[in-house]
Length: 508
Ligand code: BG6
Image (cartoon, rainbow, N blue to C red):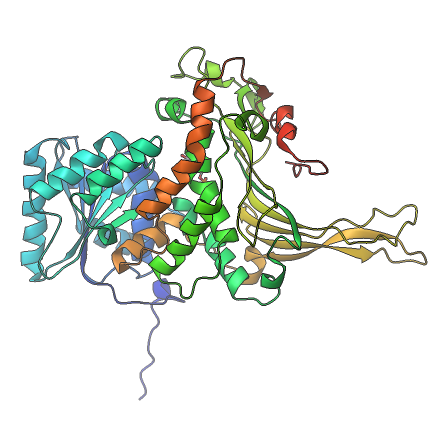
């Protein structure tokens, strides 16, 4: 009798790439990031059968607790934040593979404990596991940890790969980013270092590469002859929550523009890479960043607007202004909104204004890139009642309604030649009928596979800081009140000041 092969429903639709046995070591294992993002991501990889067949995780943090207490903490985090309801069999077998080391990051005993558990796991399985050190701590510990790993010789391993994953923020300005690069590179080689920008792990961001380089229709138009302007928006409706300590020292420019928005811009505007290998892609991205001329100190006021949210209404209730948020320094001039105009000085993009804006407590959450084409050269339609011919716009919607939409002008049915804009839409929800993985799932998997394409290289991070550094400097020396916008509004009216004639912000 023929036996029927039973499909494992948990691994349906999965592409399995064999991954070398790996021990993932998370520094800051009890922190917010581990709880909300990393543990749920590891669980979802396990659920999909995407983790290496032999996998261990070691958490390290200050709290004194036995393995079992950490497992209970991880279970709760996964139950609370996983994008899918955890399956008990998968979850408990994952938790069994978790160990915990208590210790301070500046205490050599912690590294001793870590090494002995990692070696024990290798010996048990009789394999040299790859080791991934994931720095999910406050940034002040990045150098200390890298140095301590180096001192114990944990930065290399015979017969296995050792990698270092570094969370954001990567530096506070250009000088501190350079210093951090020097410190990490004095212990690890660049090929071992994975700098996280979680926007690169978003499906919609990766799809920009496919849209541009997998379709013939866009590339011929993708230049200054056809594109009028580009507008990148990262609007959030949430405030700063409990993150005042971090946010008040950062602000929207450092928090979102220096990393996420410039990454979106490089992917949108880079030249086609000869292959999708990590360095070919990153070489092209770095070239774009080098082609962006940072504003001079004198140009900052006419090209960049910053603002702070005042009290207002958000998520259906009255909310305080930024200065009233708990933990914000009295009279703080940290911006919760920034809008800026940049340009890319190369053959493809010269003269095309690039507008960017990011802010908290805005009227809605949306991250999108709008590419507006030039208007048609001659308008022949003037019927009254017509909504008119608008330049075509390609909207890449990163979130929350993931998809791509192209605006076209169409004739309104009827006896007269009246026209109005209509949209041609591709929505992930309807085309793929599946939930996209979280950015961290893809990125953690890539660190295990050894694929650095979606991570920022040393020169890339520094080039991005080079663009925002003069803005930070100009602000430091500026005086005067910061413009305000009501929480829950579309942002400050002052944002219009940086637009060139004829341009307008897309409504929020
Ligand atoms: C983080 C910022 O990098 O990105 C946060 O520090 C911000 O302030 C977050 O809220 C936005 O990420 P996402 O994935 O929700 O767009």
